[in-house]
Amino acid sequence: MTARANAVFLGFIAFVLLAGAVYLARQIVAPVAFALFIMALVWPLQLALQRRLPALVAMAITLVATILVIATLGYVTVWGFSQAGRWLIANAARFQTLYVETAARLEEIGLYSAGMLADTFNASWLIRFFQSLAGRLNGIIGFGVVTLIFVMLGLLEVGIVRAKLIAEAGETGRKLVRASAATAAKFRTYMMVRTVMSVLTGVFVWALTAGLGLDLAPAFGVIAFALNYIPFIGPLVATLLPTLFALAQFGSWETAVLVFLAMNVIQFFSGSYIEPRMAGRALAISPFLVLFAVFFWSFMWGLSGAFIGVPLVIAALTFCEEGESTRWIARLLSGRQEPPPEPAQETAA
View 1: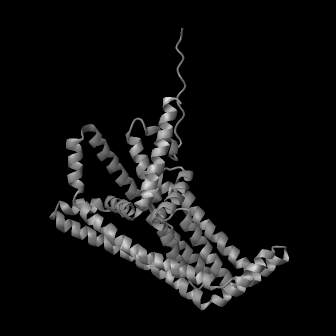
View 2 (view 1 turned 45 degrees about the vertical axis):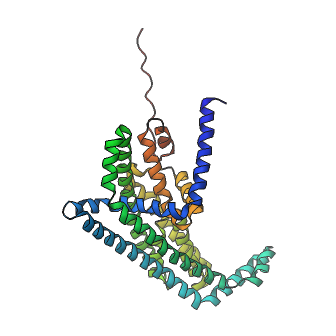
View 3 (view 1 turned 45 degrees about the horizontal axis):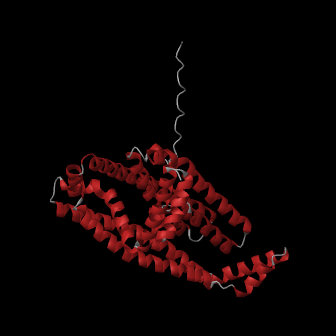
């Protein structure tokens, strides 16, 4: 093996070992990662308050503001899903009838397994899905408490750690500080773009479903708003859910297809047209890498991993940009189109 091949092989082994360690220690590592992410978002507020107030008072105000924002987002999300769950329980017979009719049609064209499944299908499957989702949301509350404890302690240490890195680690410390500041700025840009797009998507979905006469238009708008924070997976669920409910409410495949197509237009317009123009070059990431990050971190940390997967990739690429030997990785995995190298100038003989 050449030296480069050995380095690649050792790097792959290190990645596998690190991924295994992060997975096994997810109960500790995941809250720390979220705490660092939240600290990056709220640090400008903390810094502005520290200029006028004692550090402890500034931290308390910042923490209370953070809790209020998270609690508000959590409340509206739970409200949206609870409304959908209540409607589902009240109209469980519609879903049962819809499934049986669909299975009969599929059996007519030769899909006999669908007819066999109809004998065992029960609308309680969907009810259990919403119940399990509610259980996950309850688990997130405990996760959030641990995360906020790390945030509370970490906000008081940011300035101290920064000063020590600059004083003790020399140029390496300054590079870490620069990369950390750049990462925090990109986190704030990412969340600003995501929040604006989530609000717009929620409003568009509410207007669409209300215009078509769906019973749960406000709930679908709230669900679309909340799920838009999770790339790919969130918009997919936010598209399929109103489609399924429209089919159950109206009993018309034409209406369901109309809802599905209209929802896809909204998601495509927001995700492919508006969002790239708002994010600009600062957050340009390969779409393949975004999709991989969402699924990889979903496997590692579940729902919380799906949310924070893209910010973790943003952080990794930002730190890679800071090092000469790793800058090529950031360029390779970014979504930016690098300008072609200029042709060499031929010198006259």
